[in-house]
Image 1 (cartoon, rainbow, N blue to C red):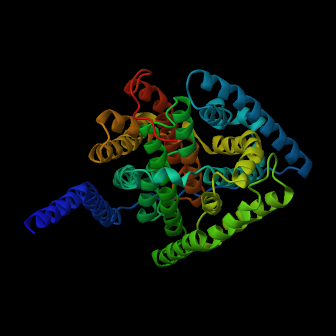
Image 2 (cartoon, helix red, strand yellow):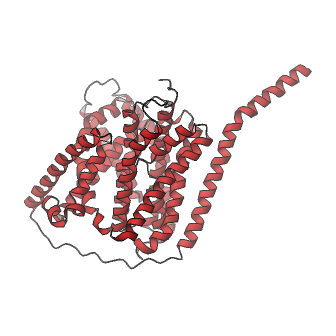
Image 3 (tube, rainbow, N blue to C red):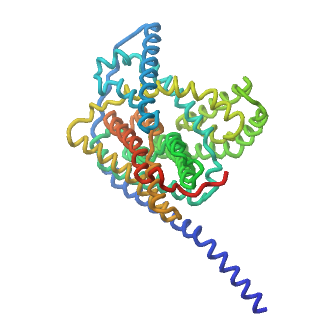
Length: 478
């Protein structure tokens, strides 16, 4: 009897010891969430006492053009940005940078910031901006749908609790720091038309973004896809994407309306997500399974089904009060990423999106980015502070959480560098903020510079932390 009792006691002890790391992570995660909420309440309480300058009145352009002239100018603009973007993409790829960064920089170079308004107007006249904007929005919606299709939820199952904890630490830390920075920026770079709550929430969200596609490209180029660090990085970035877009949905709801209505938007968003996961997902999974045996190009009914479903999902989120791109992303995320429909749609549509439609977005962003608005030592100092806080927030939150959840400090440091990749995702968020009037053109330019600097720095700094011969973690089973 004593032997049996001792065996039972030892079994209980083993269970307790085995559960200790998870319990510790859960406690630390709870403390992190509560600390972030408390910090945000304090920041909001003080920020509501601040006042911002009166907004400047924008004057509409009186330039008019015929329909045929508009078509001609749009075609010239698209041709110029595609040709220049492809050349820049090859050059940046040659020096070890993501090609998309070259395309983004070309979009800014062709804008009024560097070559001047007159020269820029020869390629990107102001009259084409509304039409280019429509093409850009369509391109971004399709792009976010493709990002959702390539999101592998299976990556989140391994070390799930650690992945979620690291990812959310990499969001909450820069989010709180960004909101705190808003205390200084709001009286200087915002306007009285924007509430401090909207401004602070957007600054926090903009600081928290990680570009999953660019990060995945860097990991693939370095042969880290199946390593321990590579899998954790992809899992964290995927979790980051989902969390950041849900967070952005709430921020847009707050910016578009009063707080009471924003809570209704949040409730509508929650209902939409639940409906997509538990109602729509089983339906689209069964329908997608019908085409799993298809080899080569997708049949026309499959393409029609995917496009209509994407548009309805995007329309739903737009009606709820959040951006249509969230609906496109969500539908892509619930479709099985390894199904024939997902693979076929990515293969057939991605070249059109990346070669034709996204360059329109880069050109549209370039037209709106006025780096020349950032003048004087003080404003460039503010820009440097934004870059520093964005970098340190992502790096510090990821490094601390990674070290506490079992990664080596070298791995945690490398992961912190990877999570600083922002790229195109950041530009999408910033354009939403500019459209809503939450950020001014000057702050928009500063944030675009931050996105480019942090993304350009990722690959070189990663090579310093993880040289070519350095271990990148144990290989993961396929």
